[in-house]
Structure formats: C-alpha cells, structure tokens
Length: 183
Image (cartoon, rainbow, N blue to C red; front, side, top):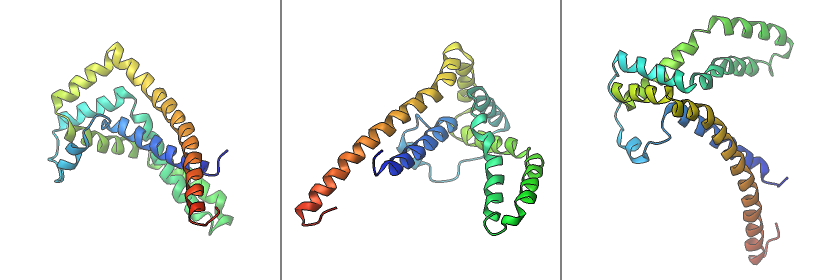
C-alpha cells in the first residue's frame, strides 16, 4: 500500500459520492455551462412535473440512494453526543431507534425535494419520456447495470490514483532533491 493511499482512497470516495449523487440527480449529462448559466432560482415546477420526476427517481432506483440519509443524520447526531456523554450510550441508542420511527416520513420529504430539482431541470414531457425510457428493456438494463459500472470504474480509478500518486511522490522527491532537500 502506498503512503498516499489514504488520500487516493478519500478522493475516490468523494468521486463515488459525487457520481452517485449526479447519477441520481440526473446531472450526469448536463453541460457545466448550462449549470453555471442558471444563477437565479428557477420557478417552482408544476405538481405534475414533480410527480413525473418522483416517478423517474423511483423507476431509476434513486430512492434507494436517499433512504440511508435519514438514518445517517440520526446516527451522526447520536455519535456527536457520545464522546462527551459516553455513559449515555444505551439511552442515546434508544432515542435513535425512536427517532428513526418518528422521522420515517422524512424519506418522502427528501424524495420530494430531489424530485423538484429534476422538475426544474426537465419539462414534464421530458420527465415522462425519461420514465418511458427507464421502463423499457434498455432503460431497465441501464438502471440495473449503471451503478455496477460506476462502482467498477471508480475501483479502477482508485488503482490508477494509487499508481499515479506513487509517480507524483517520486517526482516530488526528485525535484526537491534538486533543491537540496531529501524527502
């Protein structure tokens, strides 16, 4: 394992999270200039467009990406209290279980927020066309295979980043040696 492997691992983890978010948010194919051009808050989409967007997210399996967020926030907050209150671990765990039940509806709320983003970027007609595509055999294959393709691609990227980091480290040492420093 290389000395910079934790950095490469962190970068690949960030790339994975970004790729997953982009995939689910439907921004994989957006041109950066289009995203930058929209600096003002878009108009509220119609309820029908939001409904179509929600269906698109569900058909793509995107809701599964957002499902862990509610529990993740609850665990994060619980774990924030643990270091200063280790004696309350059991009770904090019990509260976390209760909050998971109490905040179950937040999943639908989050899905609605993401659906609004889709509905702001795509017309209702486009969303319906995308739903039709993702219900087709090719669309189903895309929805099924794309997460694995992205995961395998990112694993290859991690191997590449590890090798590249070794090359960069070697060059840093070489260049610093020229300046009279041994790293």
